[in-house]
Image (cartoon, rainbow, N blue to C red):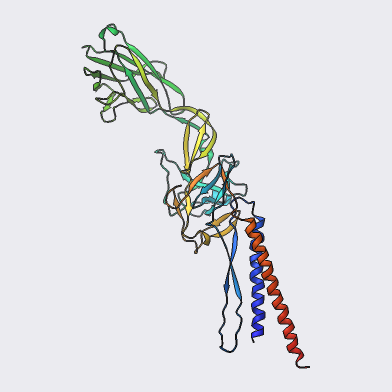
Length: 425
């Protein structure tokens, strides 16, 4: 009976608009929630089998969804570990239980933004208990990914592994101009040059470079001694000769020394390990030279650093978590990838602005920040809710009117059914 179908259609309209009202109220309630993605409702008409002479109302169904792909505005916060994605993709996180679980069993979630702070164990987490995950940086400076289609390579970001830092010296620079005038250096006289270096635990040591003319008077003898034990110990020797223009012509390595002519470096061993010293390429003038009559060290130094304590961390646009120490040294600890799926709106919301991969969203892929569809990593920033209060209030008025109209139809159908019942009297 068509009058009954009218009642059913109106009831479905009440239900659908009640669902829409629930999404609107949730959107307005979370308009100030960082990272919140507004919910919406998609209405679909229901059609029943029709006869030409008798129309039956089918009604409406409501399907709720979230506009996850819609980006909120980024705002600056002044906190280096407040993170957001400026573009597509999300941050990979896990729960407290996931931190202690094996990587293959760890719950994998994604958030668009997060205010991360170290917890009592040094792990970066939000106040709601979500822990940031990333790839550790290997000794070669590259991220150890373990695959980009799997979470197995991701680990919770632990700042305690970088609490202290010391970098062993592995490279020296020996940029010196030697006097071309034979009279500038008396027979048997030497030039002494001390250079500081650091061992593996950040302790300061030194080497002495002793320079004198060779026996033939055509070049220079270099002797390098290590002073880490308090007593000079010879560790390397080599001879350098120059052409008539004062340009390095040859390097002849001695005991304990080898020379790489392509890199322009001699290699030798200190108690802390193997090192190289840049002396200059043959035919070049960026290392050792013999021009004019004055002795002038112009590029002397080494890498490495003393022991330093972690002061703060920053996250770059490429997703690298960089530790900054009180010595001024910076060290990459982790790389945070950007997690992306084919259909972000199909992900399942699990609370605390976190989402889980579903069959509708497609599989996750871990991108480097700024590559492919992935946005840049934005430190010192949080993403605002993508709720538009003005639009929600407009929808609220529309929903209220639609609900009232459906309720009026129910009332009208009830009155008509009463009239039908009264026909029997």
